[in-house]
Image: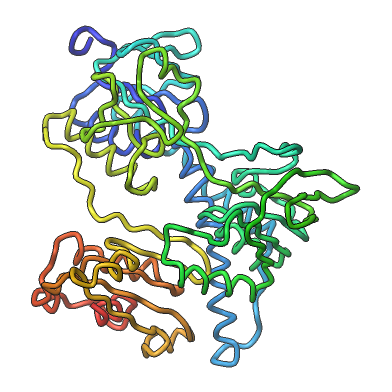
Length: 446
């Protein structure tokens, strides 16, 4: 038995990145751990999120590059085979749950399959069996939001899109966030006629809006019809089609995607029973990821937090709890600069101080803008568009960056150390990057 005669030192409710990334090294330090999972081991990201999405996006990126090189060294465009793309995506992700479970069981973690509900601050009931632990970590993640309109059962969520083997001729996507825009890109590049319904007049509201407008314009060039300020009222099945009735008229297609966001999994897991505080934004935690019940902690998308609800954030939180539970630290969690990206064509990525904040505070920041189309390396890539904006404090330290380009994600990634470790302008020149690469061109703008 463990400390205080509990079955486990730490028991995780959920098996996603907010759990297994920290549980594995914690088990290797000699702690007795259990992980409870009602669905596929690994949670959203490996099974029905990031990994699946980026697999489907790979041919889109290749197609964009091939199309850009027509008449510039390549002849003959390429076509995305939807069915083969989905089949390959499944090949990529199908082995992940087993591999993740094996990585846990191999270090002595008990993986408990079943639906878990909190009984008290040290106990979780799993389908009638009770398990006790000195500490509990809630890592239940989030689920797709569902519009509350008549006929919504006729629409599908993101998981269904990732498993859609037969390509629709026409698709209606409701939403303006990551999922809506990324899936609109995948479908449009594959040749589906996409209609995108935005509830407001903006999409991707956490990103720099002039770049978002450029992205939407590019989507329109690829056949996406974008309708703004739309309020969906109902969905009906008429003959062989689905009709979304809105305040701006009817939209007819073969398939409807409800991509109106994600909500934290806080219902029916016993939070009210044990007194864990939460609301629609997620579980409330302090600066040690501790809930209102001292023995219960939370990580990942189920947490109400100001930093992005992203896979790397969940990993960071899980790793932090490993340090906390093993005694390696007693300090509060200190988030690094958290980058974010939307995997479209082109991509938008950002990190640190936003452009809007910098321009609103000219006494604190200097803003430098560059047109990437003039970079020789981008020109060699046949990329005749793209922009990057770098933000510096008054001492010349890089504090933020935003980019739109086919390589925005890689460009922002290469700038992260300069921001996180506050590398001085003089020290920046001490870095020798591989040349010629995107990283070498990115450094040129710092």
